[in-house]
Image 1: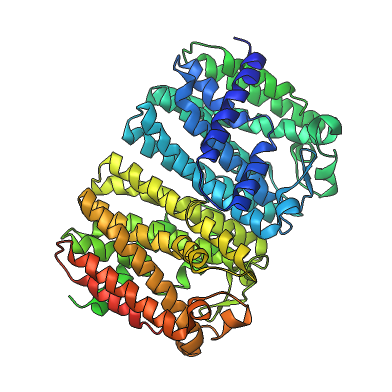
Image 2: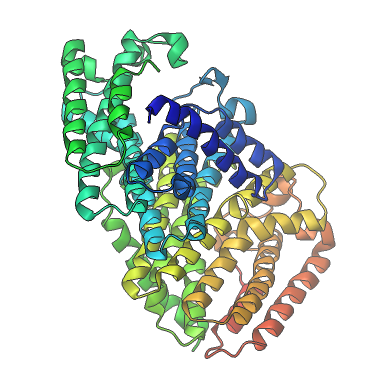
Amino acid sequence: MDLQTFMKDRKKLVEDALFSYMNAVKAPEVLLESMNYSLKAGGKRLRPLLVLATLKSFGKSEELGMPVACAVEMIHTYSLVHDDLPSMDDDDFRRGKPTNHKVFGEAMAILAGDALLTHSFEVMEDLLNYDVKPIKVVTLMKELAKAAGPTGMVGGQVADMEGEGAQLSLQDLEYIHRNKTGKLLGYSIVAGAILGDATEEQISKLEQFADHLGLAFQIRDDILDIEGDAAKIGKPVGSDTLNEKVTYPSLLTMNGAKEKLEYHIKEAKRILEEIPLESDLLGQLCDLIAKRDH
Amino acid sequence: MDLQTFMKDRKKLVEDALFSYMNAVKAPEVLLESMNYSLKAGGKRLRPLLVLATLKSFGKSEELGMPVACAVEMIHTYSLVHDDLPSMDDDDFRRGKPTNHKVFGEAMAILAGDALLTHSFEVMEDLLNYDVKPIKVVTLMKELAKAAGPTGMVGGQVADMEGEGAQLSLQDLEYIHRNKTGKLLGYSIVAGAILGDATEEQISKLEQFADHLGLAFQIRDDILDIEGDAAKIGKPVGSDTLNEKVTYPSLLTMNGAKEKLEYHIKEAKRILEEIPLESDLLGQLCDLIAKRDH
């Protein structure tokens, strides 16, 4: 199956599931509006699609992955809402639309983020209705908390903030990206594998695969910030340089960054080949990430 | 057993468990400092103690309740950190100490709150190590998300914010308190009952008990804001009137509020008597809440 077709096709299914979960929430209207506003702002739905693509690679029904797919998208969305806040990145626009706090105010944006984060764990419980064993559901909820919390995404965001204007080594930069974006991307893949009844060994290999893929994703992001097309990426280019952010190109030169990207993609593919899978979706994903223009 | 002795005694155990969980977290130092600062700011540890007192009432080992006790305290703490933010209540002091954002800055306070909330779900998984059945752990995690998220605490906080300066009915006020403080208090009791192998009927009665107790707790809070001793409650009295907040006394007069408090305490005790329990701790708790001076 072609990855682009898969992504286009499944994106709609993910969004339907996402808003069906949201429609069931009984809460003050303005809170729901604020949560939905950012969930609808959309994007590639990359994390949910990673869950489904991995499930498909293990020959399982993708439907099984919907609760996890929606939970990771809620968490990703909350992280963007909080990152955009005036005391954080102070961004007025995201994907061409005013950021949450610009529309709903700062207090509501904080609370909508809190609500999305918390609600994702309620959504996870729906796995029981797909006959997933309770012990697996507990593991998946715990791993989600690890990937998103202080040992993962939040820790990465703090390190990123602390690193602003500072001299960072490649190791520091990799810590930031492994945690800020890598852990939740990796979780999406590993959760798909756990639901797909992968063996311990396969899961361990997929963790390594996801690590390389996550770093590649970030390097490409840094490259796009210099060489990208503002209209395609939905934000002005050169913002990293403007904010004096340490990036792969600033540490390694542009050529060095491109070599590093190639290395991680090659490693990801090498590891993937060691796992017998029923589809090439994850392999195609490597190419997509290496070449993406937004 | 005497409730005061129980609370004094178990408070230390809860705090030891709390910081033992925190010591195991690998995250950037400043994030851990910010999380620990607010966790250490302390208070009564009421929610954890509700978990333990309920467990004891069902004749079970209280140790079993530690993961839930610590999780609810982390969530309660995160809610205070976010509530104090400049865009929310803009409070500089809490319990006589500078608020989190006053010490660590706004961005770090937001992230520390996010981290505490997320980490609480990782802590919950530790229930498996106390031989709690996985299906029970899933239920407890889901109910925690429901109590803390948009259908619970966050929803109540939004309603509270929206209600500022507005004319509220008693029904509106009860919605706010049932959600903003009641749901997490109620969860603490119900979680203790679930861990204590309570029957469906007992859990349903305890939910009603907790509802009355939660409202009583809030009415007492409103009364203390007028009649309390600033030194004992750790904040100036009269702040509700100053902020033009609708309270029980403002809606019902002081006498009306006191009658309402008495009614909820009486109802809570009546319901409690219908459940065969091995200790009178929850009954004593009713009296404590009715008469508390801080």
